[in-house]
Amino acid sequence: MLNRKHYSSSVASISYFKANQYFVQQTADAIAAVVEFEVAIIDSNLEVIAGTGCYKDQVGTVYGEGSITKRLMQKGGYCILEDEPMASAICRACSFRNSCNLRGGLIFSIALEDKIIGTVSLFAFDEQQKESLLSNRDKLLGFLNKIALLMGSKIHESEMNGLLTFTTNQFRTVMNSIVEGIIAIDREGIINQVNRAAEKQLFAQASQIVGVHFNEVFPGLAIPKVLELGQPYVEQEILYKSKEQHLQFIGTITPIKSEGETAGIVISLRSVREMRKLAGRLIREERKYTLDGILGTSESITELKHKMQLVAATDSTVLITGESGTGKELFAQAIHGESHRKNGPFIAINCGAIPDMLLESELFGYEEGAFTGAVRGGKPGKFELADGGTIFLDEIGDMPLSLQVKLLRVLQELKIERIGGIKPTWVDVRIIAATNRNLEEMISRGEFRSDLFYRLSVIPFNIPPLRVRKEDLKLLLYHFLDKYNLLLNKHVTGFGPGVLEKMLAYPWPGNVRELENSIEYAINVAAGNYLEESCVPARIKDFFTNHRGSLDDDGIVTLDQIEKHAIAMALRKFGTTGRAKEKAAQSLGMSRSTFYRKIKELGLTGEEQGAMTK
Image 1: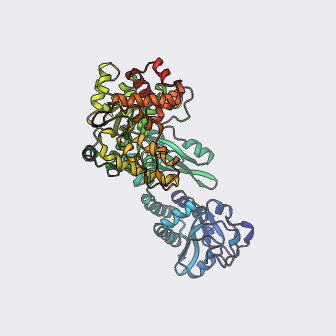
Image 2 (image 1 turned 30 degrees about the horizontal axis):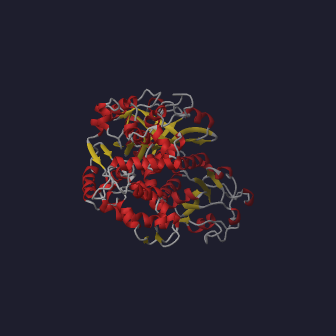
Image 3 (image 1 turned 120 degrees about the vertical axis):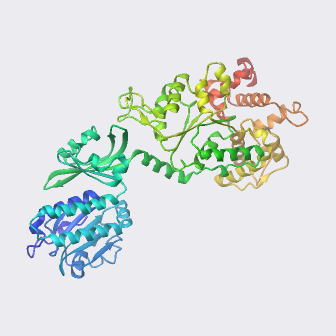
């Protein structure tokens, strides 16, 4: 910020602007409300006549002779300040550059016939403002040019209404070039201006909104407080209500001040949905998934990826089944990444990892005051966050029956209702569900709704387990070898004698997740350039020791034998307490509920579990 004490307060003569100072200050306020930069208007005596922010405090002070403004007064035209004062050649002659906090600026001369009578400037005081100012310089310079021409040609006119009308037209041009929705409201609360972006956001013509009191379309908006206090409300949730729909926005409410009083309000609107899509896009810049990126050349995987490629182009609901660790979420993300929704959010929720009492609020959100502990302002659920994109419901088989009814209604009506809410919200989402359970068996036992199953399984896919696609094993082994060499800063180049063969023969009950974890472990403990027998996890070595006599001629063991052995080994390692079983389940890539179910299905009684740990 420019330091006021460095400037002389003497004024050489009465300027053109001083006779119209009220109008000049109005112009500065209106410019700042639209473009969101600090504005300064200076006359030919280098006196600050009007301004916003720090420049409003400097009205009546005079710049020094070495300033940029002085040189521009002499030659006319405009000046672009791109560098900080200490680094800028433009500022070299200015005696105040050591104390100047400017980061960038656009300074435009105002001419009356052939005489320069002042300047109008836009200034940035932080890097974000600077980036916005410089990236939009052409539009802003064009705007300043029009403002300068306007002020120069109209400065002596006594009738201000014509000038204000002309200025308003110029502002409307700028407003319509801004991507955010802009709505202007007068002191009485009447909407008097709406830009094109706002028309698109509200799905309404300006003629339908201009002249309407804000309370009719923006109920509960804090306009009275802003008018009373004269302070902006930043990043507020704003609800737009019409007969056809309710829309959510994040907005900033900025007062327009004149002679110390608030004369009106400017609201900038950003669509909540668009902000979520932007956030999702920024996140996905770091993490993009496609079907081509999924490793596997086996016939089953190749055919699966081909079918998923075709289905990705539609919005039909998908149900992915497969054992734990087969990569169901990875395939779901790849379908999303290949779809027309790829620039929208991908929101995943594990229905088996969240307590039943919390799952509903996680899925559908809640309103303020819905229950004890509800956060102020409420909270959107996963369906709202996924609007415009895809929601992935993992472990759908663990969803309680009471919530299955509500999910079925969402699938049928494509709208949700927050807990404690009274207004439905339409959502545009694609649903991909996944489970490692047999839902049809659950239906026969009354544990899963048949109508929900048929709604979810419009497009069913089954991810084959790793043991039936042996041709993919070697590719995956070397892929994870490269990955963890890089992550762990190791230089393991291959497998020692007999190790690769053992890895290829092992049935991998935990599928790709177990394979990846095993390679990570092996590289961690590797002392040389090869993975030796000593690097192989104990459960894999134990498997071959315990099943040496149970392998058939093709080296095949039944899945039940594999799972029973794997669970037994995990229990032997971690123990049989509740916490120990959670760790055992995690080591096998299973959820806690799946692990307990497997113990029951495979007949591992408490007595047998205890015996296994001895």
